[in-house]
Image 1: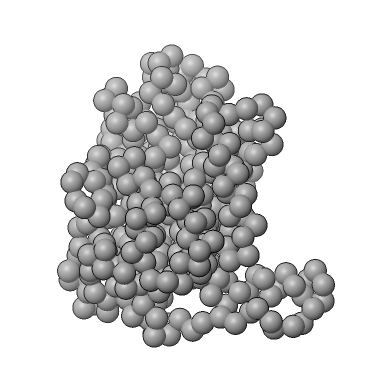
Image 2: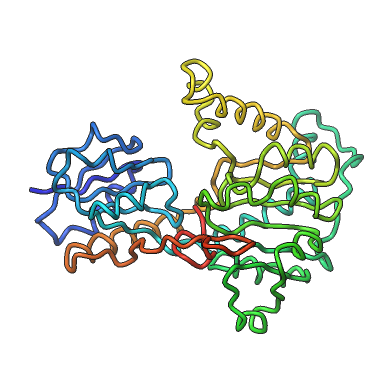
Length: 360
């Protein structure tokens, strides 16, 4: 009996997933709490489902002749070597939308924490019972300009929320959807104009090598003094060193970050320090991120923008749909098919509305 192997699965998720295949006796579901590891795969595995902590390369599949489908329970898929896997003939599926409002709401949670210094105020009371308001002056969102990079599913939800705060909303997207400007009450602008005009900049685009460090030192130099940056997308979109320089100089007044460069090393810092990493860049990023985490004007969270029970169930439902569709038709319901890219300058980079646009 061929097997469907699920990695990074919690106990409650096992029962939920099993319900989705209770009427299909041809496949056996097997579950692993660990990240993807080819040594754990049964030889007759036909389908693999992973989450964002798992890296899957084409070399990992060599010994598994029956492996025909890999799904990721996420919208971003940069953890899959998707081009090579696809060329090998393995079908790939993803989750195009699971928590558009979920991530958008969290982005504003970070923004409010930064601009109203909520965490610092809470921390002062908790640690010292000091009720002084010194140092906690914030600023209103009403009337401020928010620049939204990427108007895919999540970006559109951010626009709606920003309008609720009476903000002026501008956006950049490589593939603008002009019909949205009127219905959602915002204006598309160039990338440079967004950088120059925004009091707040929030990122909602995918990560690909081509848009690595989309927010870098030259980009930050174009921004308004005192800008706030929010990132719930992917850490590699921002040059960490450039961000630190901007925070130190005051060019950037604050940052709300749910994602970080070198995230896997950051979250396994002890292992990286004790046993080494694949390259010295990882250790440099560890040092840079530690400076970010301790900066008084940074609110950092451990990649939890997606993490609500409702969103998790929607993710699992879509993953089951992908697999069931493949079993009946040979194609996942939501296939990874695009290799397009995003870029402020245009040439050959992914649209924020392309597959992988919104992020877990």
